[in-house]
Length: 276
Image (cartoon, one colour):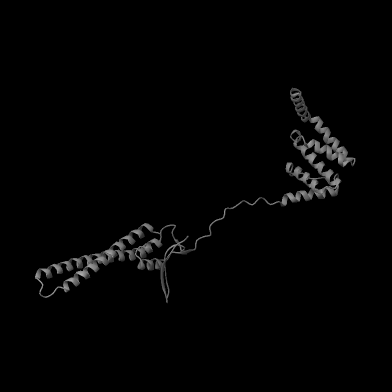
């Protein structure tokens, strides 16, 4: 029983395979019969023949495919199915965009549906490409020398960074920070040494006066040197920020982050913005 089923299945498949192999003569006969049915007003038979022919679409030449879709559209118009008629006309137009109908041989009703299908194809807009959302532009402002100088007066090196010279600005900022810190530290020690010298009593040995004075004098000199070094860095910072042009491609600055400094007639503000 199992063997018989397998043999039967094979025979059925072979039969279907042979049935699908339709000769060109057969297809042409189908199309001719469909046209005859259409011309004699047998639209239902015409539709059946044309749909049967379109099952073997790959075996049809392009001209025959256009004819099949066109006459199928004619038949659907006559049959009263406008939507299916348009669908067939559109398929014919895809294969032959220059396709037209002759008013001498085709009824105005069919030409109207055909023109509607053609118009719908022309008015279909192409798919709009998906564009990835972009981040909103960051608020910008032009770099000015006065703005850079105001920043460098507040914090040495800041003006250079504002102008786009980030590396130089950081170096000046570090140098000024070190010299300013050293100056402040040495001034505090110098003041302490000076007070220690003044606090020595009148009856104290001379060497205590001498040692205290030497210590005060040493820190006085150290503080003076540190203040001079800080002054040099500060003056160079102002000179550089005034006469250095903004870095190429850095004529705009980001206002959403970093140190900010604003001033007008009635107020002065300095702070630091952080973006999250």
